[in-house]
Length: 287
Image (cartoon, rainbow, N blue to C red; front, top):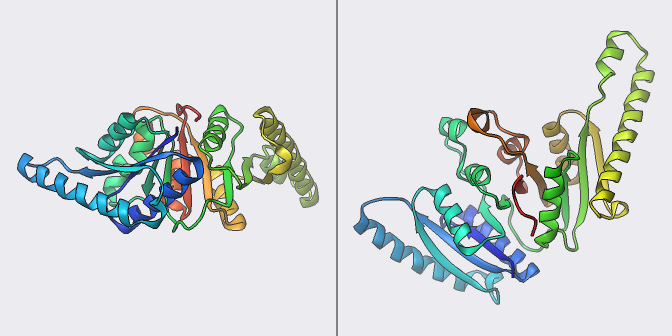
């Protein structure tokens, strides 16, 4: 049986995450665990807060309509939020972590990232960041594809979690027309440059279709958004144009200072887009 972990700090944004997690659990027949994190503090105060947190979790489980009939329990962990969430995910054997949209803290986030970004960086489990109110299963999903094993793993994980069931999938791919700038510098007529870019777009679309076929996905039942440009603006424009309920993106593993400061495509999308985003770490095992 699949297992989903939803983190809550009892805020409105966390409530949205619980509702979405409940819908996904019902859709896939998964067990759901709600986890609340208590900050490290004097032992006597922590004990009181843990007891109160259990009461609030029980009240939420009883009162959230989407949780009716869903196997669900609440747990409380003590410690730094990202570490405690990953610890809880490992303890319950979670296949998916669901969290509300992150709360930015100005310069601090520039250097250490938000809790959700740190969970994505540090874990090997797909993480769903919920930005929108949840009322029904996802109807339209957009997958950001770069033809890598990371993208293949992201699609496989989303499918294995049941997120793509009865969902129309659009795949977005950004390509580079390498010779475009050289042609412009050489004063080649605009029509020829446009024709060149269109040829490159068709080539990129054909490569994308072959890639999806190699993954045993029915390419004919997917929609395509193939555009020239850097990944973040292309994906952002695809979101604006298509209006999906969910964005699926794989995250490439990095290390050291680059991992902390530079920000990957996935991290920039997490910080700028207003829709739900499923981020699948490179090392995540498809469900």
